[in-house]
Length: 393
Image (cartoon, rainbow, N blue to C red; front, top):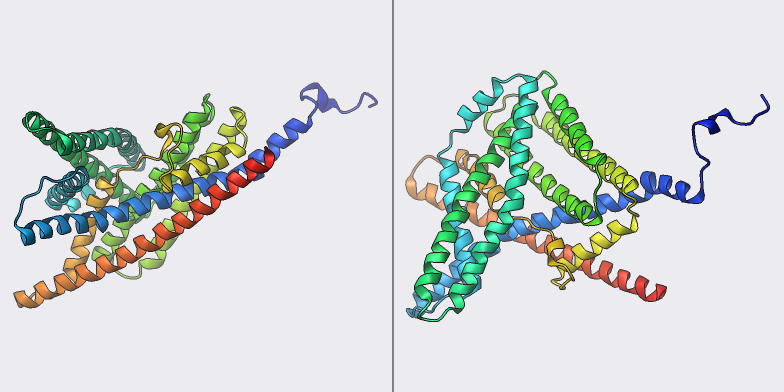
């Protein structure tokens, strides 16, 4: 009764440093982590919109200049990169257009809840592998385009063969990644449509497996930096999967479905956000990473937005939007086709042009707004960080 607090036999006496770590884990780090991942998500979204708006426009301008001048000019590296990406995107959409989504859907739907979790995990793992390797494949294509644009007449045959080879590799890899992302979207759609709580079982099992596989391991600062960027890309891919679910509901759902879709999408995003916060909070705690590190990660991301060269370019956010773009175009094409008149042909063609033009204007406006917002935020944040460093000095 008089020996003091008996809990001191099994716990250590707290210090000011331990108190700071507790408050960092609960309050300071989650906010900075979520801001970092959200900014990364919008950078991915901006890159995705650039692929659908700016890149086709530049390709059309190049072909228009070629037709009007009637003089062939050897393309620059940027023009070769645009042409290569446009070819990959077009081939991916054509190949996915021949895919029978309903057949894959019914094959996946026949699996049990546990098997759905396993199938979704398999697609998610392959998606992450393709995303990591896809950046290297695209860099290889861009490097060959740079070499082909600046090569001499003697080495042109070598660089043409190399560019064609890299183009074929990029095309095959992007189509494979598109199939994986499409299968992942179909699996998520199957869980959402099912009425046996398959979605909640998938979210609980998948997210807690992610925590278990990351939290209790030793991570360096650079690894946590890459993991935060990977979470931004993963969140964008989940958005593409939810867009697939929305398109399928528009085409096939009967009765009131929109409220149910909004609820399920909200649950998926909230679970993803909470899991990312929990994962990074405890990763930072166990690896002694201060919350200020996430502010420095955000500063690097803002410098990447402003095209400011950093000391290590490998720390940049790498995102290849080709596979998500192929999937989004594939799933939205039937939605547009369902609202077109059947005849006459000229009237149908006219409405195709109208819908394409309206979509292009809306996407371009959205890209401009997001780009301006990212630029303003990056300028403000980098300036704020410089003032803070100058004040500390």
